[in-house]
Image 1 (cartoon, one colour):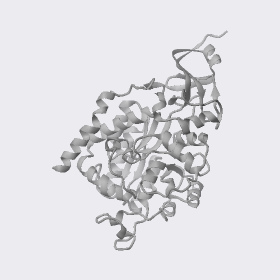
Image 2 (cartoon, one colour; image 1 turned 60 degrees about the horizontal axis):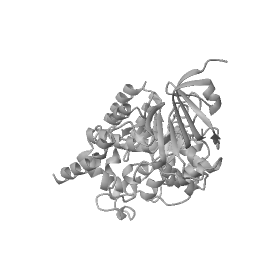
Image 3 (cartoon, one colour; image 1 turned 180 degrees about the vertical axis):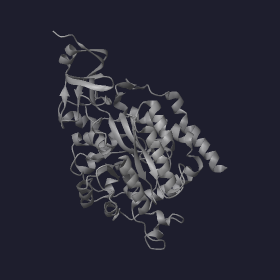
Image 4 (cartoon, one colour; image 1 turned 60 degrees about the vertical axis):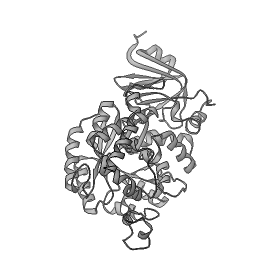
Length: 447
């Protein structure tokens, strides 16, 4: 009999949902981790005989699955929860967010907010996120310190922002940050054009992205054609933001992006509820990924129509800004996506894991429990659920569980949450941040 192979960790849950192959639920199986990666999975008894782990975690009433992937958010907005939200998106950005950004979105705001956002995501079982930050270098540093996995957006706009002056300044800073993180195994970067970006700048950005082999994420509502000032449609917006009110749906945006050569593999389009079935078909035909943020999209005025899930594996879920959706809860997004689309719980879990990983270009590293992939894992307590077996386990997670039932989270095999306790941050220190920043922003507004 061969000698047991050493390993770092063996996790033995009641149920194992590897996500790939699809619709698979395994009972009395385990996962072995070594060097931050999944070494093996199989029947628990066999793995006990084959491996000698330094740590053994047994969860008798839990489901183990890949870590959830939040394919679109702005983590630092965790400090802005409770803000009034009034759609459409561009109106909210102009009326509510822009005045705050002018006063208080400095480096320290982004650092504190991103820490708070990462803590909330880890507690909710999210092990990877795509972040649209006003100061991406600060977000990247916080992510690195937390040993989290993230895709950080590089904002591109023609206007001056907190990060740079004009399109040339944004692209120059983006290239410099790309050089800094090009070899980082946990942090990837992508281009994120903002509202009011011109076609000429989009073309410049595309050329730079091609040179760097970088991904691009496009917020479809922000790129929608605006009504001309003085027209009836424009006149429906409040004074001062007439040009910010988009049409009822993002008509023409998909065609514009196609003409600019942006609809292709490596491009993600955010805002699925703004697209009809024909436009989604065009996106998938060109190889683009699609990301839905159902709660935020509905709250910012999207029509509560049926969610059409495009064919293929490049569809993910995001939470968008915590100030809009009320938190970073991907289980809630998966539940709403399933209800809007009429899809199954298993399909919703795939969107929240492997689908999001595919949309971010990370499917070869995360999103499913397979040997060789990173050990980014989430364990959910189903004690009070009638989970049973097979499809009932996925139903219990999507339609019965909440983020409070996430008991354990590992990022690259390292425990970030253990038995419901956050290990990555000091929870007492984090708890005081929202009140402190609310007071600070109020004082700056008064000044």
